[in-house]
Length: 125
Image (cartoon, rainbow, N blue to C red):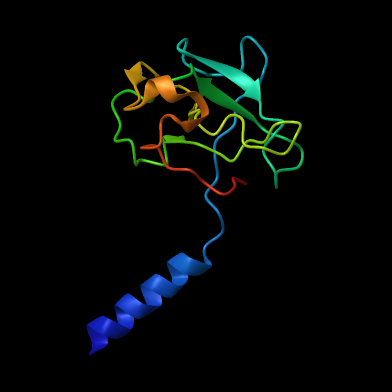
């Protein structure tokens, strides 16, 4: 019975936790810390983040190398909307600075519909 209570409290704490932080890069040549296989990009189409953040972005169709596709602490996708309000870059994978992106996604050829194996986060802090 005590074990169920502890598990219930742990589940509640996880549900109430703030959205995970997505580590940003700095768009300055000596300070961005992105791996050479990525670029430090301004994510202008990501809602809910003010000001808009800079993240290390993998090349289209690629994800982090050396990590499971579901490891959202190292790589993630975001709802990224175009000028007309439609999703435009949801297939783009972002990674923590220093993480290499040399692994092809399962459906790399699908553009915005590709890389579905990587976690799509609602938002980042």
